[in-house]
Length: 148
Image 1 (tube, rainbow, N blue to C red):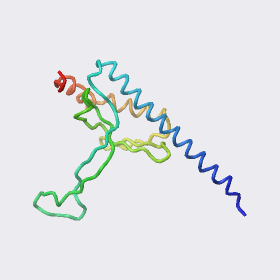
Image 2 (cartoon, rainbow, N blue to C red):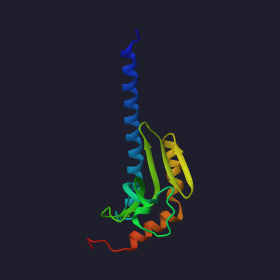
Image 3 (spheres, one colour):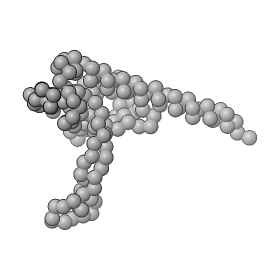
Image 4 (tube, helix red, strand yellow):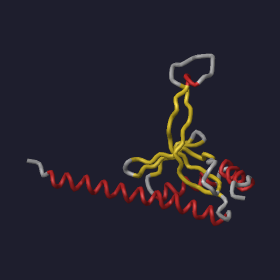
């Protein structure tokens, strides 16, 4: 008979590794936010948001644009928001697998798979140095907040 005890321990070890990977990824995202807030006096925020978007239904070719031609799709995005963590500006779509890695960033016809922290930090550096990110930061710095 198979030794199911060893098989269970493999699954538990995989779950522990996945949890550690996710914690590591969250730490990187948190560090980006921390440094952004330090640089801009906590007037802007970086993080992961739960978002929705409208996508055209496949096979529907109707000349009239109406709600029935679209599906609402939920997704996660890496965003810059104001200091109240409102008004997010999407920089990239964000996916994290059940194992943590690879995590995936999608933006500007680019789909980047990050298999470890170094990959993630490199890809985030590319994303954060993009003009779209700069514009998002400037927009929130130049827009008065509700608390002001």
